[in-house]
Image (cartoon, rainbow, N blue to C red):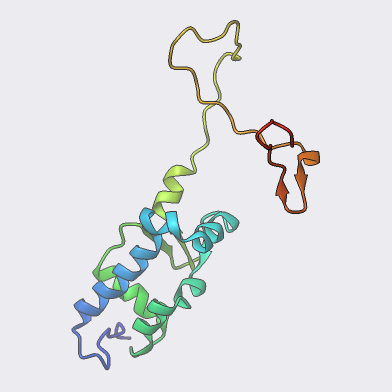
Length: 155
């Protein structure tokens, strides 16, 4: 059996098509995109970084790139990533999943301290830690939003 050809109606060479497909997949899983693409980031969290490959194949731009090619989309992606390796994603063709290399690197467990932490006095440094934001008590929130104090300090 011959490997699928990435040449298509676009007239681009197989190498050029492989590069476009790999670049699109890499874009989806790049740290910059995952910082702004809440849907994909949440899907990676929900699937423990093992997103079904079929889900990515349905993403609009990748689906358009694959639509004009001969053969099935999975075979075309396999060929593309064999010609142009991915930097930000890893595909497990046996499990039919795709994962983020950045997510996998950041998902390492945090090492617990060897001794319990205790606070004996206030920090003496002038660089005190920033104050935590505290939500107002439920009684201070009305149907129109939080109560606002007038000039005399009354709510």
